[in-house]
Image (cartoon, rainbow, N blue to C red; front, side, top):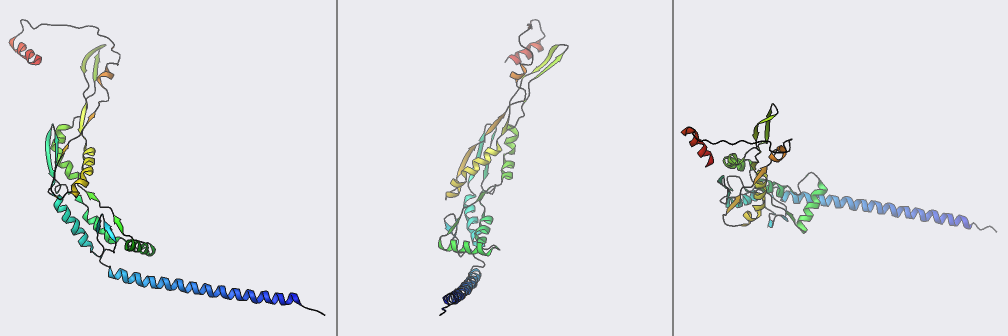
Length: 272
């Protein structure tokens, strides 16, 4: 009596394997279809959403604390232009011992970068990258996206306004100098420090004043002392004194008794 148990077991395994393969295939095509359907539906929604906001800023996009969702790019620019118009009457008074220069915010184009802010707010979520656009749109809609305001002023115009004072301030340093002839010092010139207007520091001070200026509803007059940097000469008198001359080797004195009146007058001028 022969019973083919192994054969029955093999047939069972074969049928079970075919059943699993069929289920896996069905699941694969189901999820593939669901994914393609999701992509298709998302694309239609995104297309419709983009059409609605084709010429507008997407909802949930802020610049600072201001929500510009649904506004046009021109509106964003006009909004910050109006703020700049209020700022324009603020003046900056640069003071020093060499003179005073007053410039208005309007003169140096001080204020918000209205063109740039309008472009940034409008362009967010409108790049050529589909997945990036979807991510930004969803993030803006549900959580909001806040752009930091940016500010500007014309350094070139400011420098031109300060040039008259700069010409009075700027002075090149003078090196100490000895002239020797036949083993003797024939001429000596002590060193002198130079100086220059610190333009970089002035620009930094204006940047630091920006937030207080744009936050005010009223025109201001802001006084800024002009910073001056000291420029030391390459060869100072102290260094020159160490160039081999270590002691006083002689001195001479002379009176101007019986000198002509003109000489007496000139020496008295020097003494005074």
